[in-house]
Length: 210
Ligand SMILES: Nc1nc2c(c(=O)[nH]1)N[C@H]1C(S)=C(S)[C@@H](COP(=O)(O)O)O[C@H]1N2
Ligand SMILES: [Mo]
Image 1 (spheres, rainbow, N blue to C red):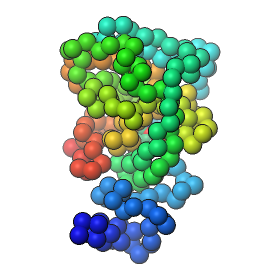
Image 2 (cartoon, helix red, strand yellow; image 1 turned 60 degrees about the horizontal axis):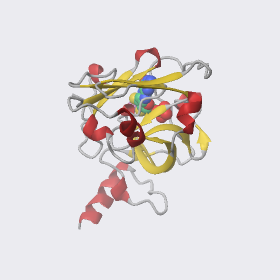
Image 3 (cartoon, helix red, strand yellow; image 1 turned 120 degrees about the horizontal axis):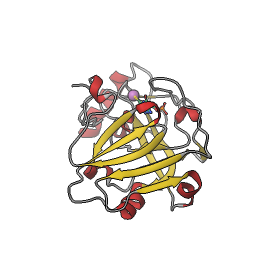
Image 4 (tube, helix red, strand yellow; image 1 turned 30 degrees about the vertical axis):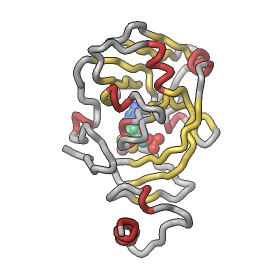
C-alpha cells in the first residue's frame, strides 16, 4: 500500500517523466526531484575561495577537552572512510548514492572530547559562512569531514579542500570550505538559517523554511 502511494506521488513529481531504472521511489523525500546522474548542481553565496593549501588550517574549538588544529597533511593522515549517501537540496534537487570520502566526524569527537555542556556545533567556513547542528545530529556514523566525491578530490567549486558532510539534513548544512568546528552550549543560527531557512532542515519532514 505504502509503496503504491509513493509511486503515485513520484509520478506526479516527475510529471510523466519516468524514474530512472532501479531507483526506489521511497528514497526520494517529498517535494524533491532527481538531478540527471551526470549533473551535480552548484549552489553557494559569494565567490569560490582561492585556497593556499600550505597555509590552510582546520580548527576544533569551544566546549571541548582538547582543542585541535590540523594542517592539510595531518587531516589527510587521519583515518578515513567511504559513505554511500543521498543528498537533498532545499531548492528541490536530490542525488542518490554518490560515494563520499573523508574523516569520520566520530574520529574528531574521540580526539577533542566534547564537554558535557556542548550541545550544538557551529561550522565555520571561508568568508564567514556558518551553519550549525545539534551535537546529537553531528555524532552519527555517516557524517564526515569530506574531501573526496566518487573517488576524486572535491573540486574547489564543490568545497575543496574540505566540506562538512551531514546527509541526514538538507544540503546547506553540508558546509563547503570548512575551516573550523565550534562546540557550544547553545545554538547560534547560521548564514541561511538567519535568512529564513528552517534550522531543523529535515528533508523527510520538509522543514525547509521558517
Ligand atoms: N561555505 C558555503 N557552504 C555552502 C553554501 C554556501 O553558500 N557557502 N551553500 C550551501 C547550499 S545552500 C547548498 S545546496 C550546498 C551546495 O553544494 P554544492 O554546490 O556542492 O552542490 O552547499 C552548501 N554549503
Ligand atoms: Mo541549498
